[in-house]
Length: 237
Ligand code: SAM
Image 1 (spheres, rainbow, N blue to C red):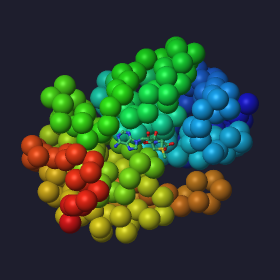
Image 2 (cartoon, rainbow, N blue to C red):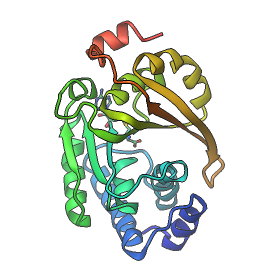
Image 3 (cartoon, rainbow, N blue to C red):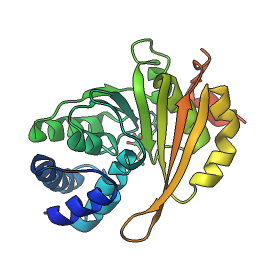
C-alpha cells in the first residue's frame, strides 16, 4: 500500500534506519488504518503517501532529536490511532511503549493492530489527568510524548507528571510550536521541567513541524495534574 523505499529513504534523512520487518509492519499498519477508519473515525488522512509522511514520518521525527537507549520506557498521551507511540514501537521494538487514550474504541483498534503486527505495548484507558495522579503511572517513564492533543501549556500538565526525574517530555508540534513554548514557559517550570531544545523541520510536502524537548529537573508538585475542568478554567500562567 505504501511506497516502502520512499519511507525508508525519508526516514534515513531523520537518522532512522527501518529494516524490512519495520517496513512490512508500516505497510500493514497503513492498510489496517484505512480498514478501521471506515468503521470508526480515526483520521482524516487516508491516502497512502499522506499516511506515510503525515503520520509515520512525522512520528519518527521524535527519533531525529532524541535517542532513547535500549529498553527505555515511553508513554504516548492521547495516542488516538497510535501516533507517535505505535509508529515508534515499529521503528524501535526494543522500547517499552505505553499508549494512553480516554477513548476505549480507539484503544480497541490499537489492540487489534498490535496483534496483527505481532507487537506488544501497554494500553491504558484513562484520562491523562487521572492517570498522572495514579502512583502506578506517575513518574514511571523515561519519556512522555504527545501529538495533537492540547496546547503545550495544558499538555505539559498532562505529560510531565508521568516522567521520571531526569527523563524527558517530547512534544510534537506544528508551526505554532514557538508561540506555544512562550505561552507554556511558566507552566513547564512549575511542573518541574526545563526546556532543553526547540527544533523545527519540514515534512517532504513542505509543511512545518516543531519538536520541543523538556527535561524533568524536579519532581512534579503533588497537586498536578489537576482535574480537567480546573485545567480548562485556570490555566497555569
Ligand atoms: N496523537 C494522535 C495523533 O496525533 O494522530 C491522536 C490525536 S487526536 C486529535 C487526540 C486524541 O487524544 C484523541 O484520541 C483523544 O481521545 C485523546 N485525548 C484528548 N484529551 C485526552 C486526555 N485528557 N486524556 C487522554 N486522552 C485524551
